[in-house]
Length: 219
Length: 203
Image (spheres, each protein chain N blue to C red):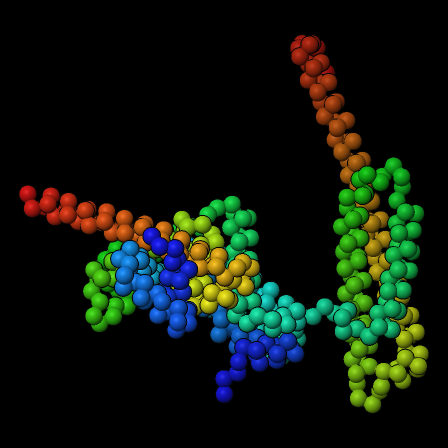
């Protein structure tokens, strides 16, 4: 076969200029191999039309027109509010870490560790949710007509927000500590119960052994 | 007046969800067809389409219009299909449509000039093409799909697949040549089967 592949493909899909087209046509007149080749390729293209895609219901459910685009919340938060939030989160993190270390007895740490991660993660989630709600509220206030952002900052509302956020975090921290204490109590009580059960089972085994060794002895 | 994709992308980026909905309704069918023909299974295609539009929505701000919106969407879809195939560690499967029984087929929409036999033949041909395409190397299959079923130019395919124009033409040529051989062999086998059946029944 001639080395006409690229030109034949361009001709087949009619993606060539007039000059190229004329050259291919001239070539096809004198080359039976390429003529057969182009005929075969055209026939395959016809066969390809048979490949159907089954009818299907719409996949994408249209979004309601009022829906806000799913932007990341902190990208829309004013810088000063974000900075305030970052400060309180950092402070809460340090305080929370210290509190957790203080309330966890060293010997019980392995049992607590696996669960405290979950508990803490839930608490963190709670903090983030509260922060978000608080910042949304502030943002709404800031964008309210007649209350320019500069005025809001200078009026000391930022400090008020910080105080409220800190208060919420303190509440959340307390709840986390309560939950952890409750869990710790459960673990201790479970340990105590399982010790009792083991002692009971051991006693029963001893009784069975004794009765086997001394069948007529009775108890 | 119908808005262009670019206009819709601009308003969708500015937060107008109805513009994005319009883009989806415009492109869902071809995107589904691409995913279905690549993966061969309806539920997989649906999942990929959903993910593709989700990614497009999230990535709208990063889409700077350097390519056509449709090309960008095709590229997202192809990447997802590739990940899907890799994750499933399998080659695309050939979905056999249900209802190849002529009685079932008779219930389907027949064009006024099409007999049940024609419809059966069309179905069989569709399956044969799907099977032959599934056996092609991925790069040839993708080039053929984008050209034949989505009408992309050589240049658009080259940009989408990040390869030279001549490579696109070679892939198309090689892919079509293999398909041609396979489909001709199948037709020859069918003809010989029909002949054998006819000769058997004449005794």
